[in-house]
Length: 216
Image (cartoon, rainbow, N blue to C red; front, side, top):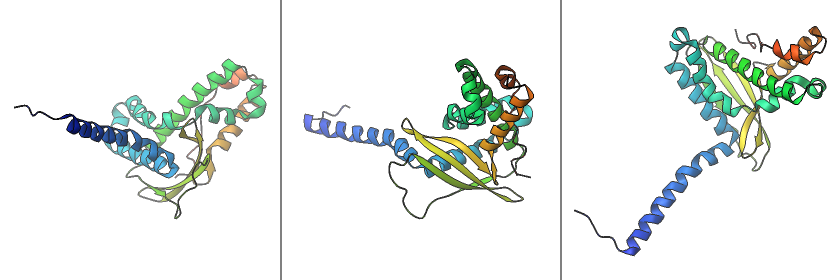
């Protein structure tokens, strides 16, 4: 049996659902404006993914890496990070195509290494250290600290973030005192020296290697 609503009731219902829709659409945007919530949400999603796909690393490591990449690939500013790793000297020495090529190679190698490293940890807990005071509005740079808690120890993690095009992006990570951005930049320079500053050979032979990043 159908009910007949008058125009006033329909307008109220319409406004109600529009308000609900506005809240649903706005919530992620509001959450993402806070760098601490942004990092914490993704970190907890990562832990959940690791727990749910733990056995997948042995049976299908490619699928496991893909599960991790889905989380981290969209939130890292690979264009800015890869340029920083090359350093000003080699960035300007490279062609536009070489810069783009390195960005893709660096992204793939970093995510592969990160996924493989994560697969070695058991029973991880990640805690985000939220500030006591409200953060300033309209900030462009932020530093978010976390603790990676394993069954054996605790390791501090610092994320460097930059607000760009309406969203936060990770531009560097410091794990247990090891600055990954600086580590990779030194590796690129050493590789460039090895190949007599030939950018094509340097980029073609790149492999991200942060060791264990201070995590035993």
